[in-house]
Length: 407
Image 1 (cartoon, one colour):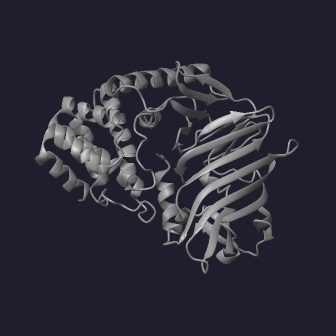
Image 2 (image 1 turned 120 degrees about the horizontal axis):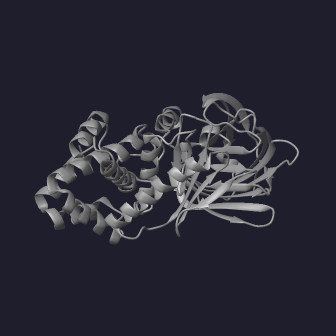
Image 3 (image 1 turned 90 degrees about the vertical axis):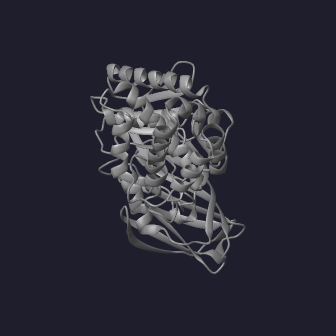
């Protein structure tokens, strides 16, 4: 999903190791200081631990001030060092034997102006937190996780997942495992609901004419995809737009954050087309290689949409473009997402290239029928996809497709 894929690859190059630890869930609470830009965070982390002799390792923003680490009611001893992750970051070392019942609670202070980076600016209105700012204690080697975050603030809050709000508190809950906990907190956030769906554009300083353009693009893509595949699996998507002119757009389950400045570029269009396509392609296991059924099918759908609006693009030009990009990548089949630093490229672009090749073999009409059936039947595994290809195109084509998945 992420368009910050190059940064994500760097994360894996730095921290991925074979680990006996597994994070299941983050339960977080953020208390904002109304008079300053400081905030206090308390995270309770639910872990599976297969090795009591192991040492837990968490990265955290370098300016975070640790207040306490406890497990159940007992204080936990820990060591802190500084290590390169995204710049210089704190590294917290905790002996696993001190963790009781798989629960660990970490409390710390930080401020928004300190978490500002070149790519993620914070000002008095727009405050953004995500993995790139290392705002929560993390280690990607411990796997993907679900999360619930509560923020005590009257400000608007947007994140990855379902959002609920009381008088002075917002809660973001995500039941889809991910590697990130993105949040946007804003004093003046405006909200525009798209048609009768749960697609919502959030923005603050952008001119309404720019947002109008984005809205028209979303509606056009949504209606085209609905014609191709039928009703979507979900209609929940938060699209957060800012004017910082940063170089990174990124996406997480039901959440997109991007900077569009004063223009809506072709790259912006492509990003949105991919993410809107996830309203149909989101059923496979995101923690395994089966995630290619989410990512590559969304990317292929974005390519179909691009073809319909760009006269210079066709099946041949798209195949040529992607061929250069994927020729040295590892096989899709059973790739380990946590051990291969290029897994995002493989699952998204190599998979989309294979789907373009399949279209070239069977024709667009059969290809669309195949995808429509895969969506309608809620297919979630590669084995089921192979069976579907066999049914519509024959054993020779499905055997070729499986061979290419493993090549």
